Image (cartoon, rainbow over all chains, first blue to last red; front, side, top):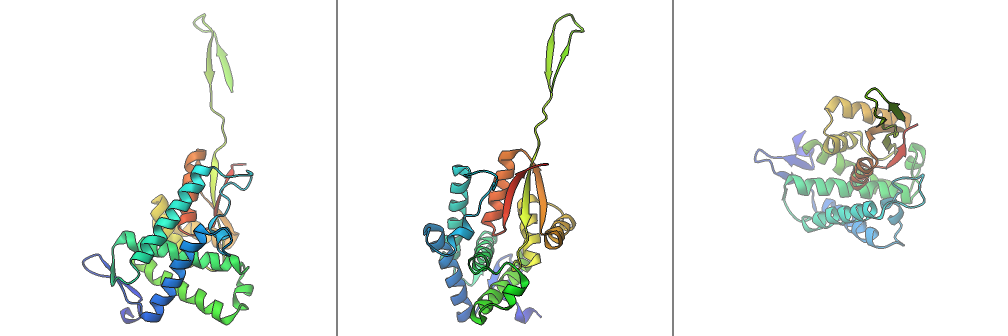
Length: 144
Length: 95
């Protein structure tokens, strides 16, 4: 079923992106929202991106939280910069996968979709967005 | 734990470390594909495919799994890497 794959590992080790325009539009939205949410404390995804590291402590080590903020932003920026590429190297593909996964989980957290029942009964457009991100992740994970 | 010995006639003191390890915990969620969890474990910890799959199944069936234990600083660093990759992760002091 190679024809249905959205990402394909080629013999030269590059990863081919086979998303059409609407697929790339979903990717653009996901990457862009992660980038904005990381910087905007009022964004609905911000809490999901800044979960506690040690819940038994009142505050987390600022060095760790700064490192997380920097790494999330770096991945999201790389994903945005390579959005229109036809081929990705491993580092770029990992940035795509991490940012897709952050977008997926942040969407679930922001909408309270933390059980299978709630997920299946959510707004159809939201469910479609989630299913699309999951498809991207399935296909990309097969290449990495 | 401190122990005193006087075998040589000179009092010496041995200090044995009794610190409890810190656990890195990964929590289940209903949206993350299983293959992505396995891939992230492999990438961050370098575990075998079998071990990563077993840990992923523990997360899926029990709601959480301890994926690494040891020194606090390293636990915190692994936890951040897991969070950057999009998994829900925390650290806790071992029971």
